[in-house]
Length: 253
Image (cartoon, rainbow, N blue to C red; front, side, top):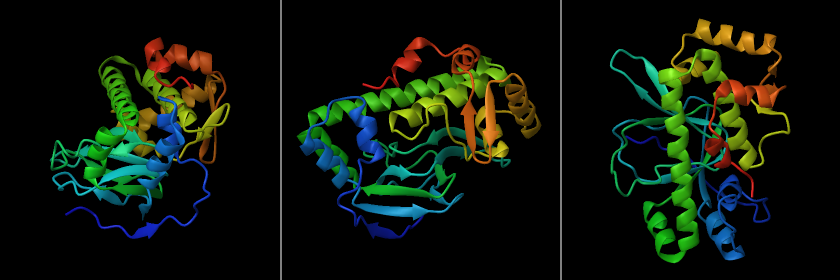
């Protein structure tokens, strides 16, 4: 059964723009009416603690979710217990956006950190298509962007070295957070454990540790508590071997 989470009402009507509005506003120019509608989608929201499941594979989709804060993971568990994290879920991301087309989940979703999600009735997504065609286009473009990210992950798992995979992950996260104004000029918060990185990049924990150490020794990154500083972004992009089109998908308007 889908995890039940406590619903709360948004109290602060004068809040700053949500990550969802920032993300879609990067794709299209939003009107005040469209902004108000997007913020209204997130009036009901729930809180999850780190490692708490939101969706378990095989669950029936009852809601579409919007990540309001915190980080999540979409993952699969193999029969022998091995886990593959297929994607990170960051503020502004949808979970189950296309639930109207698939009634049960073929993946699981859990919080990586404490995470707040907005709950959206699946029919509201159809409402967007009917009433807000510009927003519908933004959602389509956002979905395409997600597929581009997934495609790059496949290339990484199949062909990139551990060093290249790690550099690519760092640059991907930086650009995704930058779009929603959650990255600093030269870095971002870094809550991932080495186990989680291993499950994402298809590496052993030992290999993850060695790769992170090599990036530090090469003067490309510095870690401090739960944050990362990107010391040489140009070199990181060169190591990551990310195509220009991938970066253009995250260009700030």
